[in-house]
Length: 153
Image (cartoon, rainbow, N blue to C red):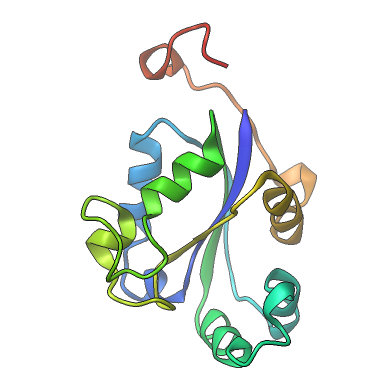
């Protein structure tokens, strides 16, 4: 099973789309194995977006991500990183396909509702920023047989 970090960003929280987005991941058969609401600090923003800190747009990014609480989730499933990113759609909501989260709810590049890790390396680094190992609760749902065949692991 692959793990990924998903952040429901300030615009998602402010627009009260938390439940709708979580429901999409659950309906897909992904497991939410950790979740918490928190306020991102400037320090955490700099750690999370370390590759962007020296770029001209970084301050706008930090101002946005620290503007309101977020919901951080650890999500687990088969090919979870790709599956979640496919569910999100293109980064720019105006270019995201209908049926994707961003395609259905976003019309912005920055205010695009959700962040998701883009690789196993990023997922490991990002998960460690938001969750202690003791906060991760992996489990096998009793309905797993309804989501995939027994030989799909």
